[in-house]
Image 1: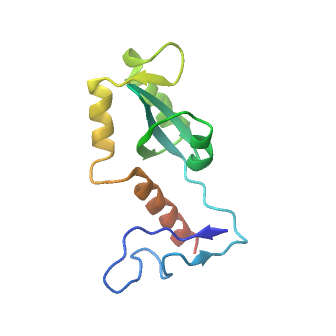
Image 2: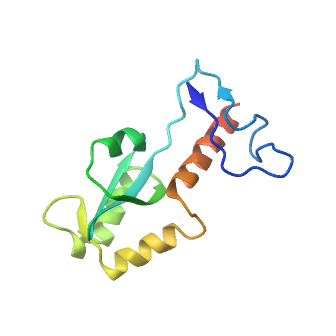
Length: 132
């Protein structure tokens, strides 16, 4: 069952993207939309850069202290980020040292977003609205 999660509600009480109220169950016979994201998670002074189409499920399997940012994209974007921050890679893993360059990237990606989950909720909302 999908529940509409639009974080932006105008004064009239209706979301901007679709014409259903927040919390309204969206057609539960349809599978949820697939939103591929590249994520950055922090654990101490280390950052994991990975990709998933189901962040809540994926994060449940990973030790982390904080979700830092989401970017829309899949494996190709993840590979670009790994190459971009290769100098900060810790061993052969997807974990990187929290360098100034990586910190700046996370700040840029997260600009204007108080909570990364709000951006993800917006993308899901957009996909549901397009699907109709």
